[in-house]
Image (tube, rainbow, N blue to C red):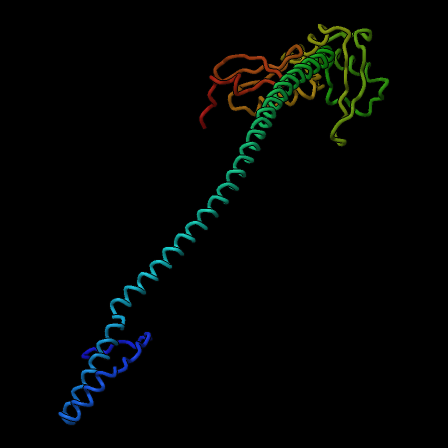
Length: 296
């Protein structure tokens, strides 16, 4: 054979035994023909054996096809098994995820209801807070006005000599008004006259003077501005702390030209020439929307 074939284990066929007839013929022919005839018989037997062996041998191409079929079958079975396992595992994980999603959806709905409830409560609380704040502002504004109104007939004397005894303050004040401002004040027209604490201990303590009537106070405050008045005492309105803070705030606003206090109220004049009354809780931006500050 020209090509070598791989050694393959096959069932060896039994070597055919020469029958008696053939042996007799062979013997007779051997006897008749001699050594050459005997060699020809052996060659025939060998050829038959080789043909039998070649017939029983598996070809390489057939072997490849068999191996390929086996491998493909194994691979297909393995593929089907793996696909089935993957499918089952995916189904299992998908079911778990769906259950978790369902739980999350329930939790989300519960949280939504809680958020809606909380928003309602917050809105209610904000409304109550706004109402409370508005009422508190109104109460504070009214309290400030009432306090200021109670000081309507009161003034502060800022530079009364500290050497004057407290019991002589009323007499000294009336004498100053009579001599320097030509104002006659009777003792019965002054209800109270006493010193009040000062933030600066080095300065003279202010003296608080409360008149019996508001017109007496206005007469004194108007006269001090007269050109012929030589009053050396510094007289000021008795303004509440909240109104003082409001006046300072208005002075610092560039849209306000001037600020003054009159009859328990604070007033201001804008750059546009408008005169407005201001309260302690007024929003200046809303009240002065059309007023533009001076350009520097």
